[in-house]
Length: 162
Image 1: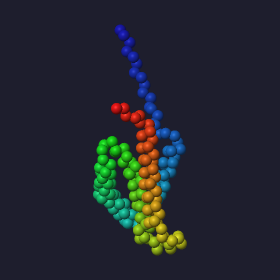
Image 2: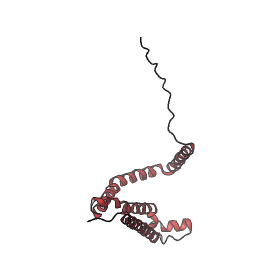
Image 3: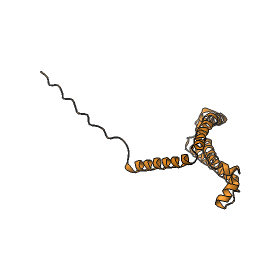
Image 4: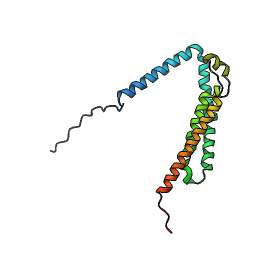
């Protein structure tokens, strides 16, 4: 009678958690976020909750369709399917510029100019100009990078034979 092999014991695998430093950093960031949440909700919990829900709705119902529309315009503006590789040269500076606008909008628009000056003692003038300059630098740098890569690709391409 042939012998049947004995079943192997299945040892539990080690969880792929990574090194301890990123885990510690992640735990600290969660602790900091929890602390900030507790502090925010302690003062005006309804206002904070309303702001979070309102910003989520604004993002999902207004901004996401605008992102999609702007992306379609960029893709169509660049033309043929071979040019789609160039869309990141517009997307990245636009996203960074919009992120800066979102973060600094109260000062760029001048809505909190007096409050800013009272709190810091600094002049709130110039935020719009600086944002426009940063946006121009982002798009200019992206255009230079695109021109450099197009030029390098043209040099590496062998000449067409007739």
